[in-house]
Length: 536
Ligand code: NAD
Image (cartoon, rainbow, N blue to C red; front, side):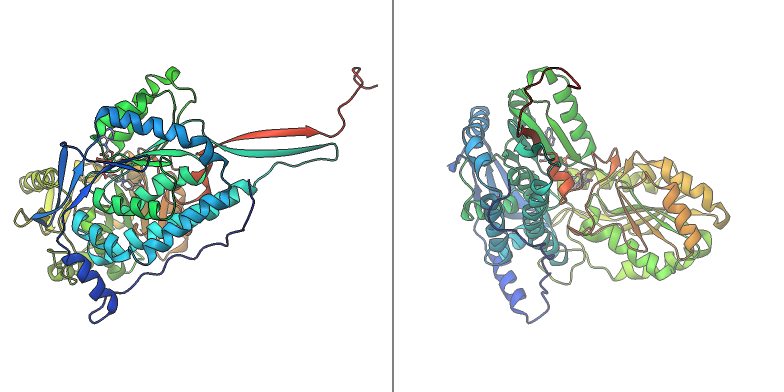
């Protein structure tokens, strides 16, 4: 229901610049130097719970540096969190949209001002992001999600059926009957903010299980929501062990939805878990999942080789390739390859890998020991593989943290696992196609990987571009023409993919919010008829 202020279309939050001598850099440095170890509690109904079941959070690029301890909840506490959401659900649903939106706007302003450096520093240290990657995520995109979700909810509520001369019709945009289980990934601090507040703005209560690898920045965001006046219990912060938390959530008949971002395998396991007991829920749960990708960059012979090379560097190696949208397979025509290859080699030789607190670093460490081991194994196998030629990189090291050199591999078999599987690290696989095989290459790209998240086409020939868009119509939910496949902006490129990449519900847009509402349509007749015969 709309009552109260009308919120204007927000503008995207501008990025701060952190150049030498700026106040922004001085403030961020101070936050980065802060050495307190944070105890991250479970928060249920506004109460903080500390436990002996503790997981340490360390900086991936400096594993000696302890940042936080996550106090994981017990099974009984997770059940308590489910019950707490149920208690507050009716009151939260009855608040006006304006009341709920005000809380999101206040939280956005807190992140934009006094918590900005703290959450950026936590994202840099906890998730090993450079400032160029952290500021657009933990500040700008998080703020945008809050403001755009508040605005887009208003658009949804304004959508009403037609009334006629004899009756009034309306849609009551009810929240779902039950709670939403939000499960967030490590790689974007902002995503945890969206997975929770998109259902909440529509009047739902939320059980939030953040990734333990981003829990520090996620907890800072949760504190901002509390400071903004989010009533206790509307979102409970439950950094529990993943399988246990999921088991408890799925055991409740009140589970009404899952809002997930993470790997395809985990989302599929959640889907199966819900499907296997679908008759146990009061409402058939809404399942929204944005998952993995094997995102392509396709260059046409008409493309500019430098533009292609730079897009590959930024698209494949920004945040160490740990973006769902990261370029990880490229298709380059033989006629451009030597120029693109030479430029890749030259630029990558200059690119600095190391401590993210050094502002000249381009890449930090990968997120965990497990990821580091997996990527090291992949690179070791590639060295012995006759289908693979190293163009650049290939080294890994584990002191003082989990480092992997930005690596470009030329792969002669276009169906090689390096061209099909998501690796989630700084490894770009390139297939060089013959210029006269353009048509076949389009079909190849479309049929190579199970994913369909992002893709980009570099091409200045309008007919070829049109043909590529057409053949690749289902190969990506976000397609970029003459641009890298990463860096979607809220409000500008609503994000999500199909096939194995998820349900494509477009995070940050009104389409996503529709999944968290169950409209009741009400018809009120002005003069009920007193005649039982038809046509009389
Ligand atoms: P992940 O699947 O390992 O973890 C995501 C979340 O699921 C975490 O909170 C984790 O604790 C939880 N989880 C893990 N196992 C679980 C289980 N058995 N039951 C329930 N929850 C479980 O993913 P990640 O490593 O945090 O993130 C990387 C993945 O996320 C990549 O595949 C990436 O492509 C994807 N991603 C997709 C998008 C998108 O918008 N499409 C955005 C960001 C990340």
